[in-house]
Length: 573
Image (tube, rainbow, N blue to C red):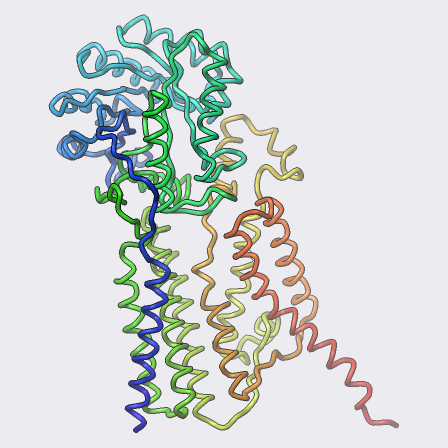
């Protein structure tokens, strides 16, 4: 009878788990599909997973040829960003497939490399005039603050004198308006419209209106120059930026809407980009690596007209979570907690296993692209250990007589580490990690208190300071804290309902607990301020960090209560 009850509880919890995974990953309709056939142009960077221009690991000629063959019949042209490091083969190979090329030269602060790029660009443009239809000298050099506008103009003039094709420079729209003198040096304006990356982010629903508005603004500013939209697109993964929410469904909606807009308004455009670029995550976070219409394995992210599944591999994660949760639940056969408790424990096991699956999937997505393996393994191991302790302790206590459950606060763990159970030691680790993560997300270079000291840096170093430390490039660590917040709350809730009454012990080090609470709460408020109180992930992270702040806060309250009670109960002389 006991075995039958346990197996029934496992079966019911598995069904509930599957329903939850399925509901979270149901196919999403993305509106009217693009049916206009061949696309105008698309950014072409043929780097595979494990390859990176930053580390000088480049694609082979065979890989470039394979990627161009995959684009045949889908796009009329491609845009490159460099003319060396293997990309000099693009014009020759593209000719085989009838694909036109907008060939680029990478220009930056390295003058020696600039000379090599310029020479290669001129050579390729003159050698393949039937394939290279136009050229671009430099990409967002002003935004990166690597050269001044007059230095950039010098390179543009040199190329114009040496090639027959139209010559341009590519930059975000604001910098074109700030540097109108540069327009005199180019044959056409190449401008980038990326609503997701705007200083005031624009959501997909408003993106087309935004693009039209800035497109018209650029055309009015330079009425005698043709305008090429050199980059336009949407990321399929990463953190939200207020209303700008990444995702496969959002990317599909953006693509369909923009393709129709460009056709209706006869816009000259280049989508960003053909394939995901894992190497970009090193500087631009998860979202920077996920702008491709195809992923890094060259698989399409969505089919024209078909509903989009946000996480196509969710069944694999569900299977892993289901197996882990079912195995944990089998322990109830040995430690029998009773029929009612068996169902609660089976659901707890599946919930904890599901949280671990989400954490594992997120860790792989964020860190695998960066060739960093220790960080996701460590955070997963910490969560898995805590999940195992939570389930084992809940099972053991439900199988035994009712008794209060004592929990040691963070300061208590640090004050007497050997006396604290492993569960509380792990919780203290997560509280410390939450302190670090909150401050890392909130302390940004554009804060008023940091603006003046950082303004003393050279422009290039200031740019890289923003890239490395700015909150817009960071992922919120929500999955890494699911077990210590939601999992802990669920386990304690089950114990509370069953009459085991969890409570926090009084703080033995109130100053330390007070400092933890103060830093966490002030960090949460600062984070909401820098995210304009409008980012859903920032709010979710704030809620999770606030939940962890309750541990030291309640410990402080318990100490205060104990001190008020102590004098009343002290013996009189």
